[in-house]
Image (cartoon, rainbow, N blue to C red):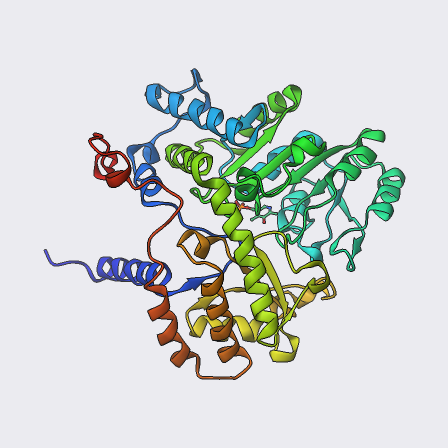
Length: 432
Ligand SMILES: *Cc1c(COP(=O)(O)O)cnc(C)c1O
């Protein structure tokens, strides 16, 4: 039998994607990353076909002798890495983690306060997303453009007036840490809880380069496991509060998850181990790269936001590109040059500008993982200028990008299984 044309098509599309995004593009999407080959090998296992409803040792299915141990190991490693007592690893994404926690903290009809949407709150924090689906109402906290952060004084007043069930901190445009301490104190004084969504910065927290909200008074934290934390796509919930953990665990299954995508677990464990050994070095380099990249973009003539604050303390940089035709046009032109970014609302944009907002958002974390350093980001800033400001043909710049990417094909901040463990029986194909 010859290969059915549909099959050939699927294979071709997948290969094209893989070659393009993995080997020929510079990826600057702030919410993405790449697993190490070691974690990928641990991901691609029989566990992807299995069920394990319930908790380790108390499953509704047989066949979980090893998955139980792996799940406990993930909890132990993440607890060590994040220096918190309780880890719930079964939420299959950051959004599902939020759904679980929001439902633990409030009933339909209750009120929550959230970080302002235009300043980067995630759609799951809003009436258009998970919060809306759960019937929880939200009010946006006031934002102060000058400090590029939640306006603490006004927020405290709002918490006292509204007396919400909970307050959500954390964002998808996250240049500076939110004031967890001040907000938690105000919230706790009116009996409200604080959930801090660290989806974007989990890897920086793991590398001790971003405050851990649980150590600053937040009651519970939610996260994705695939942004600055370079693991498989997934979610995690963590807390030091035993009651909170018990509630969360009770709601994850059976309310929000049945199978929890078990193959995530060994890959998450591998990533956690990488972060335990290399996390600080990795997080340091991300932040150095962000600074250098922001400065270089400004020197090339771009309006990089938060200049008076040193641009950023995270992996993220935001650029106002209104004078260059707006976020949609700029993001598309860069895509034509194999530089992948996303268009993004800026704090002054109306919500309906979401299809053509004023800004673009850039993240340094993934290319840092592939070994890019400050000078490499300076060169990249020049290529971006050539496309966006000089108006050069993106297809010409694309050739330079493909050439440039050849220097950064190998994931760093991981173990080299061949070199690091000489004489060890571990070989990547053995995991397959
Ligand atoms: C990305 C993101 C999420 C959602 O994560 P998924 O894992 O894609 O569901 C939640 N909150 C914030 C702040 C995010 O940036």
